[in-house]
Length: 148
Image (cartoon, rainbow, N blue to C red; front, top):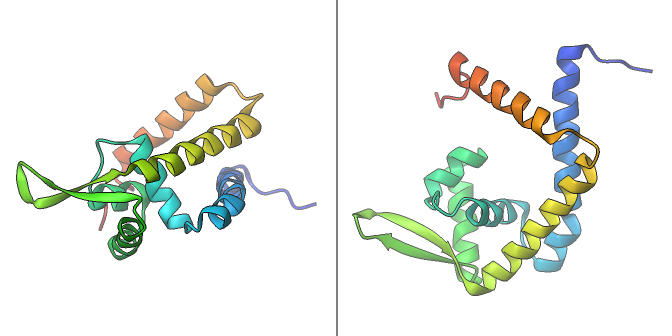
């Protein structure tokens, strides 16, 4: 049986978690006609309402600006999102979730919560959070998370 090196194992385990997470949403996306990108945007706006510009989404979720734009257009046309001008900067557009979108966002957030409860039910979350915060800080200090 293949046994990866410890360094590689971290990447493989995180990749497996990510695949399982997205696979868990396949039937939700089929039922709601959302693409995975639209789902990611909807959940991001629901979980991070203050980060409501397309640029915020693109940066945080590592989705290209053109893909964010395409998905947002579709979601606006489908009545899930609204574009709101920023009163302090007329060039800035803020996104908000409509009442119809909020119904889907709440359902998706519950699905997200249930997924992590199922996968992480026997894991010490405070230890995981500490490790992830340390990894994120190390990435930031090493300069790997900067756009080139």
